[in-house]
Length: 118
Image (cartoon, rainbow, N blue to C red; front, side):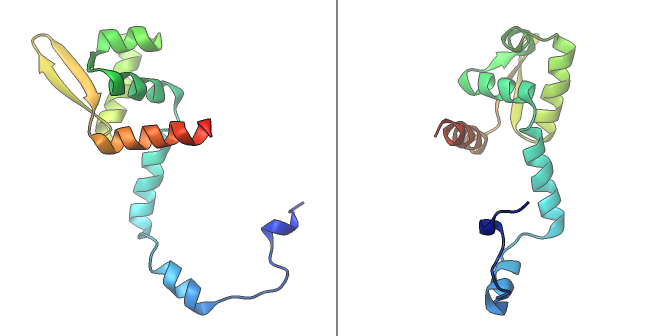
């Protein structure tokens, strides 16, 4: 059962508003990419990894310890995060170190945390 706030009392379509809004929404292909981008944030392990590498550049061993998972499972999640351009890696001798890709990712993470803590 829908509440009254979810429905209009009378049909009052405003063609100007519809036209304006329709032309401000990103194209379908980009909307699909955006949906996939946000889907990646829907995984608890990936969110923990993002929070960890937001604090400090870490190798897979360290990330595994932080999230209490095996290195293989963490590597799989890191691959997803790398493909989405959320994290980046660099070689340091025998180690590969991970960090957030850029300030956009940090801002998205911070905004999400602020939103749930309100």
